[in-house]
Image 1 (cartoon, rainbow, N blue to C red):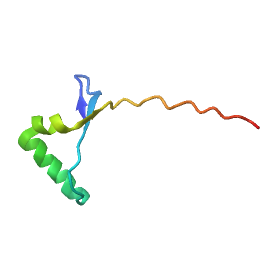
Image 2 (image 1 turned 90 degrees about the horizontal axis):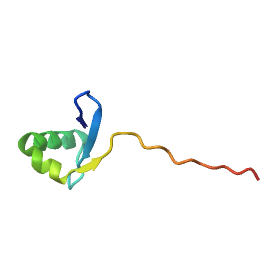
Image 3 (image 1 turned 60 degrees about the horizontal axis):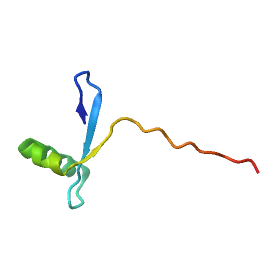
Image 4 (image 1 turned 90 degrees about the vertical axis):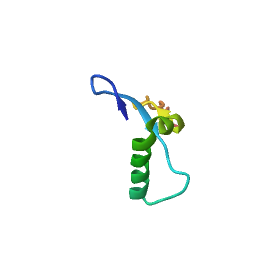
Length: 63
């Protein structure tokens, strides 16, 4: 998560490994990747808005 000057969430980043590993191994691999080549990792990562989106309004009909 990237934060702005006020400490508010600005942008989220998500990336996963090509193969399935244990959760601890994934976290370690992500940490090492970010520490060794952050710009390359972020270039491949999926960006998302950390701000919650409005839920869709559900219309219920009485029958």
